[in-house]
Length: 225
Image (cartoon, rainbow, N blue to C red; front, side, top):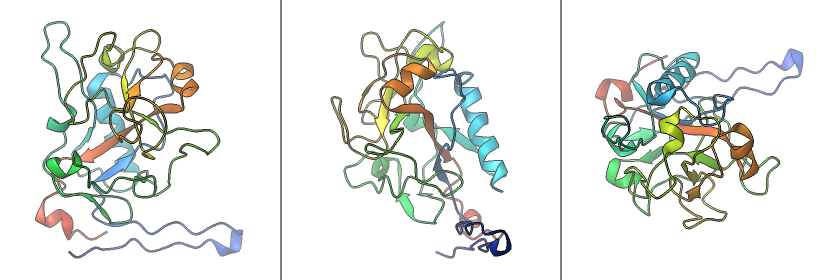
């Protein structure tokens, strides 16, 4: 597959580190920053907009971006599964490496999701277990298969509108740690609460995953910057 690469800009005159090369077919990233308000993301719509805005800032705003988040049935609204929101794949990270070929592959044991491959929209790795601070708890609200988690006490932090009481399912982007499924990228354990302090206290920072729903378009794979 052809990949156009954004030129590396070295600001040697200022002593700055060079900017990492970015693939022109990026269709997956972990957010470089959360909302700053805990798990209150403005609902699914607010989270999707956050994905769209972060992608736009890197030149990928022409794609349709969705947050990998599930939501429980609430207020007459049907439950939402994260796996049903993100298109059909394949998906590529900032470096142009394929992280998953399809929805089934994404939720398989062989998925290429590791601390090294789960890059932000800026191409940076995110702190994991052993780093200071640890930020490996990633909001998903999901079970291992990408469906909504409906365990007792779990409300997806009021479907991503709460910043206090409540709980949301989180994954470990570095595939290590504690919880019922410590090596799961999308369903390791429940959060201690929904505030920024709650999320940080167990090794998180309110980050989540973003996927381009049109990541499998032929023209997308060959787009030029």
